[in-house]
Amino acid sequence: MTPGALQGVRVLELGPYVALPLTGRILSALGAEVIKVETNSFMDVMNYIPHYEAGVGRPEYEILKRRVSLNVNHPEAKAVMEKLVRASDVFITNFRQGVLKRWGIDFPALKEINPDLNIVWQTGAGEGKPYNGFKFYGMPSQHVGVSSMTGFEDEVLSATNTSYSDYHCGLYNVLVVISSLLAQRRTKKPTFAETSIFKSAACTLGPAVLDYQANHHIPVRRGNRDRFFAPHNAYQCSGEDSYCTIAVRNDEEWQSLCAAIGQPALADDPRFATTAARFDNADPLDELISAWTSQRTRQEAMDTLQKVGVPAGIVAKGEDFARDAHLKERNLFREAIYFRPDQTKPGKEWQPGSRKSIALSVPIGLSETPCRYDERMSRLGEDNDYVYGQILGITPQEIKRLADAGVLS
Ligand SMILES: CC(C)(COP(=O)(O)OP(=O)(O)OC[C@H]1O[C@@H](n2cnc3c(N)ncnc32)[C@H](O)[C@@H]1OP(=O)(O)O)[C@@H](O)C(=O)NCCC(=O)NCCSC(=O)C(=O)O
Image 1 (cartoon, rainbow, N blue to C red):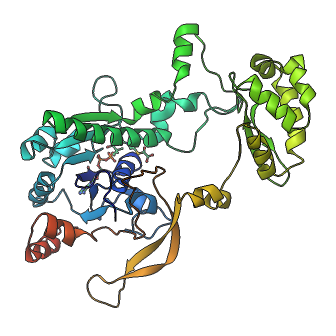
Image 2: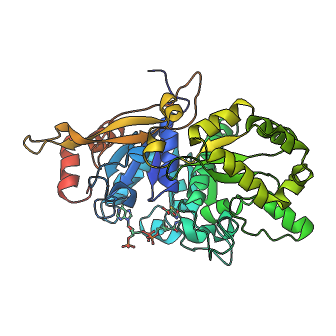
C-alpha cells in the first residue's frame, strides 16, 4: 500500500464526541497512526449511539484508529499514559484543564514527559474571560454563528441539526497538527495550540461580520432566499417530497436559466433584470420557476440546468443520499462490516458481524499519497496488545496484570 501523507506520525487522542474524534479520523486517513484512549466506563458516546453495537467503533470515526482501553483514573494508569505520551508526536484532547491535571497530564506535565510533543487542546471557548472553562456542545456554541441567521423568519431559532462548529473545529485541529509538524521540522520546537468550537462557529459568519461593521446590517432570517443570489430557493418537483435547489448569482446565469426553461423573454422582463430586482420580486420569480420544476423530476430539473451552467442540486435525504451515484462513484461511501468477538472461542477471534454499515471516507483525493481506507470496525481494547506490547514494549505478562487490575479497562 502506498504510504499516506502522514506516514510515520503518531497521534495520541484523548477526548469524546464529534470534533476531536473527527480530527483523529482525518489524520488516520492521511496515514498517521492514531491511538485513541478510552475507558469502558466512559466510552466515547459516539461509539455507542443506539444504532451501533456497544463498544464497536462508529464507522466514520474509529475505523482506522488503534483503540486502546485505559482507565486514566486508576492510580497505575499514569505510568502507562506517560509511555503513550513519550511514544507520540502529537497529543490531541478536548478535556478541560482541571480534568487533565487530575490525571497528571496537564500541559506542563506533558512537556516534561515529552519535550517534543505537539499539543492540540480543543476547548469550548478557549482561555480568557468571560468564557474560560465553559463547556460547549455544538448547539450552544453555534448561537454566535450561522444558526442565528438561517431558517425562516417566524422560527424562534433555526437549529441547524448538525453541529457544524464541531466539523469546522475538527478541520482546524487537523490544520494545526499539520502546521505544527511542518514548523517543527524547521524550528525543532513543538507547538502548543488552543482551538475552540465557539470561535470556530463565529468564523462561519463570513461576510455578515463585515456587513454589520460597515453597514450596520443585522442579518435577518430569509428562509432560502439570499440578497446576493436570485433565484435562490428549493423548488417543488414532480413526485412527493421532491425538491431541486437553484442558486443564480448573476445575470448571465439568469439568462441561461430563462433559455433552459423555455422562457427566453423573461430575461428582458424589467422585474427580473438584475439580482436586486429579482430579489425584490422573489415571489413571482419563484412562482415562475416552480411552474417549470413541478413538471419535472428533481433529477431532470438539476440536469437541465447544470447543462447550461446554472447551479442546481437535488434535495437528497436518507436513501437518496446513501445511494447518490456520484458520491458512490467517488468512493465516499464504502460498505464496512462490523466485527464482533466469537463468543464460542477463547481469546480474540473476530468474526464478521451480520450487519453492514455505510462508512464515510475522507472527501479528498491525494495523487501521491492516497488516503487510507479500512473495512474493519475496531472495537475498544482491540489494539491493546499491539499498542501496549509492540509500541510501548510492555510484556504480555504485564499487560495481563494491568488488565486484571482494571488499569486497561
Ligand atoms: C467535551 C466536554 C463537553 C466534556 O465535558 P464533561 O462531560 O464535563 O467531561 P469531563 O471533561 O469532566 O470528563 C468526563 C468524565 O469522564 C472521565 N473519563 C473520560 N475518559 C476517561 C478515561 N479514559 N479513563 C477514565 N475516566 C475517563 C473523566 O474523568 C470524567 O469523570 P468524572 O469527573 O468522574 O465525571 C468538555 O470537556 C468541553 O467542553 N470540552 C471542550 C469543547 C468540546 O470539545 N465540546 C464537545 C464538542 S463535540 C459536540 O459538541 C457534539 O458532539 O455535539
